[in-house]
Image 1 (spheres, one colour):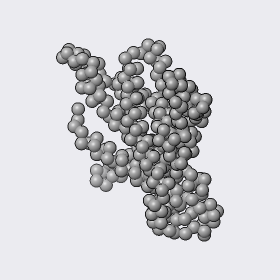
Image 2 (tube, rainbow, N blue to C red):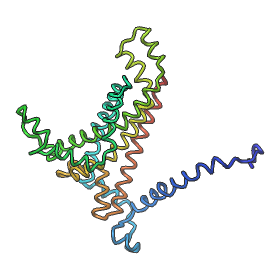
Image 3 (tube, rainbow, N blue to C red):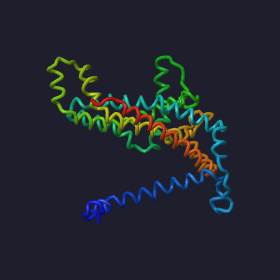
Image 4 (tube, rainbow, N blue to C red):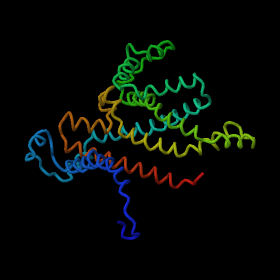
Length: 298
């Protein structure tokens, strides 16, 4: 019974959301709290077997992280991936969606499938194909370059080129999902807006920048936030293609956490690194929301 209104409390909404809340608490909230506690300890494989071997070390893991050149290198690499990769994948996805939105016959439907396929293809299969393409001696890309007298490029052997190679691969893989979101948003724009713009004498470029893009702002914001979070957790591509090499040149923060936690069994150290990444993602996301709210409504 609601004491203020005197009406009986409707329990059905709580019953419907209870399973989702319980799963969220068990699989997300509790692990996060435990990981936060572990980040203040020296837990390793011995500590995992017997908790009496675990000691409280305070902020030592965090201070060690910011004097660890390998971790600082992983932050630089992740920033490199985000700054170049996020705009590229958003612009590419939007461009593909705009082109495919012009028609709905079998050809356009086929290309929708073609562009979406990389996003659902297993990363190991992708690594095999792109590993062949990037092979310095026998790869297809260097063979094509040799036809126009360009020297071989060490696609995965030089740190900066290797980072760019992984970005190209990730952009190719990431276009599909974002393209679907943009296509759905494009098809939700009323045709009357375009008809009104054409009656006013607007050309295609003016319609794109004054009608289409402003009406895609919510889809663009959603894609930007999710893409940015995904790229800050960049893991699969460097893991399967380079394992963080050469010389940690492609090591991302997520891969650093994986290596510390599951290869070197430094669970406390890895947990501290994961919270640094967590805070970075929260800050970047809040900045995005701040800029989004400051924009005027269309």
